[in-house]
Structure formats: C-alpha cells, structure tokens
Length: 317
Image (cartoon, rainbow, N blue to C red):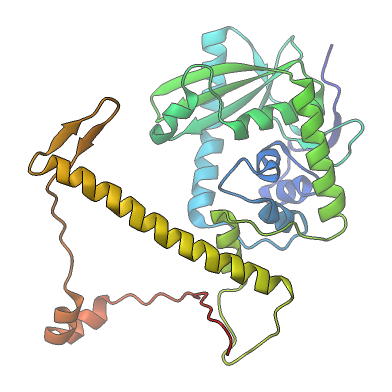
C-alpha cells in the first residue's frame, strides 16, 4: 500500500519564501508539538502568529540552526541507508491529508518499496540523553505521527546525528489513538483560532515571552490604559505566588545551609542516594563603579546600553 496523501504543491523549484507561504496554509509536522504544548522553543500563540502572517522575523541564531539542519539532512539520510540497507528517495512536494486539507507534510524522505518514511535530525551533545534506549523526544514523536496521519504510512523512521559523532536511528510505529488525538488538537487550533483569527492564550513559555518582547519592544511615554476585569485576578494570583516563592526560597536556603553545616570543611560528602560537593570557586568581575570613576572615557567606550521593559505592580490607593 502506497502513500495516500495528495500533493498540494511541488517544492522542486520553490524558493524559501514560497515554501514558508505554502506551509502557512496549514499545519505541518514541526507545528504539531508546538500546538500540543510539547516544545519550549515555540508556543501555540507563536504558531498562530506565523499562520496569520504577523510573526516577527526569526533571529539569526535560529536561521543558522535551520540552515545547518538542512545542510546535514543529506548526510543523515545517506548514513541511514548505509546502516539499514533501506533505500530512500526525496518527495519534492508539500503533501496534504486527503480529508483534512489543513494538515500538511513536507517530509524529508520516503522509504523505497515500503509504506514508510524517514525524518532526518541533528542534535547537540547536550541533548544525547533524550535519545537513550528507546527514547525519542516527544516533539519528534508527534512530528512522525503527524506525517503518518497525512500520508497513511504504517511507520516512520527517525535518524539523528548527535554532537557530530554519534548516529542513532529508530522506528516509530503508527499509533492510531495518538493520531486521532493529534488530529483533534490540530483541527481545533486551525478552525477555532487560525480561521477565526482568534489567538490562543499567551502561556508562560520562553517563546511567548520572546514574542511579546518582539511585538511590544517600546512603551509610549506617559501613555495609560484601562485593564480588563481579568487583570485583578492575575495580579491577585501573582501576589499569592510571590508570597509562596519567598517561602520556597527561604526553605531552599535552610535546607542548603543544613547540608553546608554537615559538610563543614569537607569538599565532598556522600548520602545513601546523593553525592554532595561544597567546593571553593573564584570568579573575576569588573568593578564598574571604580572603572567609571577612574577611567570614565574607557568606561563609556565599552559600556553597553540595553533597552527592555519591566513589569511592576502595586496596590492602588
């Protein structure tokens, strides 16, 4: 049984801008984990902004990572074929689910002679533990299930080059229940948010914080506004969290101090379950106050000005 997906558009002669425009006509495999809340690098609201064409330009560091991921894709695919004996081929098209037209897939490779595909990845050495044993990062697991949903494939392979010197490949079997849940989540996101032009709620992820900084970098001087009824609830919740945070910090400090007391002048200690160290460390830093006073010209030459906005609140009188 072959791949069932329809072809939305060929990517053979498509430039990057056209590709971005096409993928924003629906939900792709890499969007799945973001929408489901399983990826810290991008939140549902950022995906929404991309789909409606309002997202700020990607940072150079993100573009660099994407560039090298694309460059290494061919290397990873060839190594996968060499190690498994499975032949792979490109599918130069944006594929579309036969029933859910908003469900798209731009797959890396298809396995020749099988109803299966291949996703090629590169990963940092710092993330190697995420690939131990049978483990696959949830974001990539959902991406593979999304591709199987779109194409009707029975399985999807994932191959990853970790730290530039460790190669791992694993097979992901089709999970009908997971696919059904994924379709439901994506359908709600597309129909209730993107098509209705209603953004999902901002969450506490770094991605949402970065998006807000990019959207509203500067405050209009002396400007004021009335906040809605939800603001008081949020502020009351923040006040409660601030009290709890203070209590937790004090408790944390107490527990650390009790351990320091037990260690005394010893650098390392052992419990039944843990190894504890209490080592001497040195850190060099610039005395900026002295530098500014004694060498003001040098201070001004190397001083760096950062612009940012700080959220503060106090009870109205």
